[in-house]
Length: 310
Image (cartoon, rainbow, N blue to C red; front, top):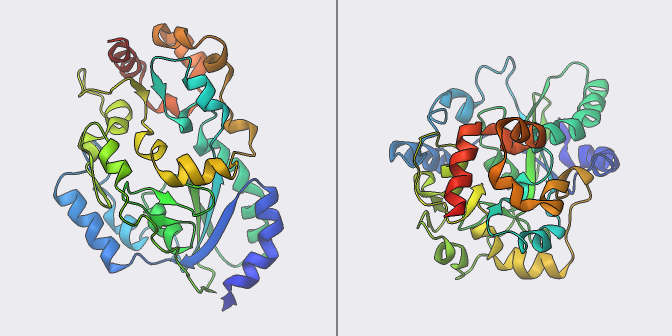
């Protein structure tokens, strides 16, 4: 057995040099309370149009069928907030989520983690390592919370006491046995209900979200010709994070910002934002083929843009 502090101490420099701002280790196990929350969430139909979510529950809850039995998880986080976004957003009558204005985080996080995976495989050649970036149906937020990257907030996002909630998560599952202290962050939401009060679709209640009411879900997951009101959002929604004091006050005061050029606001948002609502299919592909926005079809984008014009 290896102590988690040994792994962190040995890999700390490489992890930070690779572009990650936070990291931690936990055992590969989903606590009973989280298992029940996930199963209840699905049973109540709160996953909206995400028909893929109830599938592969053996993998989601028990890490089955990976080709190996994971024993430990290395959770990594990287900040994506670009402060320039606020100035750019003021020039627009519509909104794109902060996570969608740069390069696709799936691609970036895989690229950042590559040297870490290579070194882990070199040092522990008899063990398996597999990365997940929304690519594996595993509850990454649960694992990242258990690894100490943040507490589960009332808007269901993770909040780090220094960095806020604008950070991406990736996990590396391994059969390497690691003894971890697993010190979770204390819940510091207190009596605050800013996120719940600000949500225009009433998608939130404390520590629970109804995806079927969420603007982000409407714009990115629902391919129906007509969807519920998006309140000016074309891709995603940041309302519950924007109003959070840990982002709006604490992280902003500390000057928390991404270190990565990949997550900076891309030029079309800076130079000609009005054109975004009238892109043809070729322009859409040219501007967003390497963006998380590409997860939606062009017809969905057109639908969202049309609603944002109203």
